[in-house]
Length: 542
Image 1 (cartoon, helix red, strand yellow):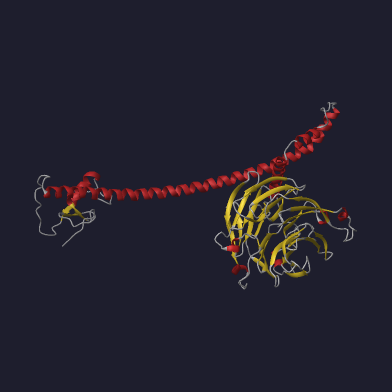
Image 2: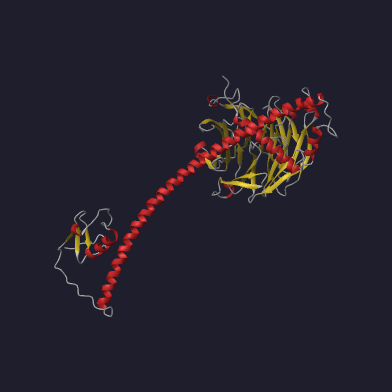
């Protein structure tokens, strides 16, 4: 009969058994452990000599008396004692290891709970700051209303005027001393503060088309033969605030303004020497009174001002048009996109060499910077504080304009190969924290608060029957932030947050490269295709 010691794992020479647990031990090792700990190994049971029972498993072997250390038997006996000590120490270390693991698990649990508490406090702090900012805006507005009354009171009391004119002249003088860059920062901060406060009180626009209505959407109109046929293709699209005028950017080096109500092209903006990559309305005014900004592969940005005749309701089509206000030649590479600041007083541009800049509408460059990758798309955050840049290597970068620093780099399609990695669509929602990106094989909605993808679609999700050459090309939120239009070989309308697919709208044989919403109530969506056509889609009229 053979036994194994529960401590050393070896066959004991003098086996004993515990009366409390029934475990087998080497007697000398157990006695040493009891002298140090006073209990049975691996348990908390107190163990005395009466609880140890000798086991007669084999004829006893009489061990020789250990001689001096000069002999081999003495050395073996010493080694045996040292081995016993090592076994006991290893056993104790194992117990300590298990204890440390339990303590570490508890510490990690407490750390996770603390992080959750900190996150909640940070959120509450941000909400309090936003509320304070809104209150400051209200107080400032009240103070501005009260200032004229105080001035009148001073006149009644006969108080003398300050030398050199009134206070407004001094304010204008102080403002005039600011540099163009500081003026931009001041204007951007004021715009951000006002828009942030307004967003907190933002309500759903009256007359917003319902999701049920969008489920009945169909193609309502097709406009053909825009631009020239020598270089067909529309790659940029924007709709003015009135919803009637559509601005297109073409591969024929021109931008055009089409009126849906008149069903004709009102103006062709000529001047760029290479393809127009992007075009945008300046939404400070609506209709024919709005300015236009275009960017081109000729490395320039142009600002166009409406002709005086545009303000005349009875003006003929020949009299309507836009003239060149200024040409901005800041970049040394192809301009890939332009974006209008929410204040409507500045425009941002980005180039294929990774450079970006903010310009005034008079053509002065006030801020500029670079990123470490070729840029393919640019968009302003709704508050105007940040820029979103899409790159050719599959990343989206959030840039702080004032600090000229990249705050976040998000992986859109960095693992894709070739042109499939390019970010070909980027747009912010008016709610301030959602933005959408598209690459050839994936469309995704991001949450800026978490810097993570909230929803992801591949081609099989939105276009299950698409052919192998199909690809995502654009995406855009509507003004209310309630709907999202995504373009592949078709236009798909989605409901924000639930991300339910409301409509699937075919664009025909030629691919669409741009999409835009019509009006503040999401009454229609328009897509531009590479055969120089516009496709309008609307909910079916009841």
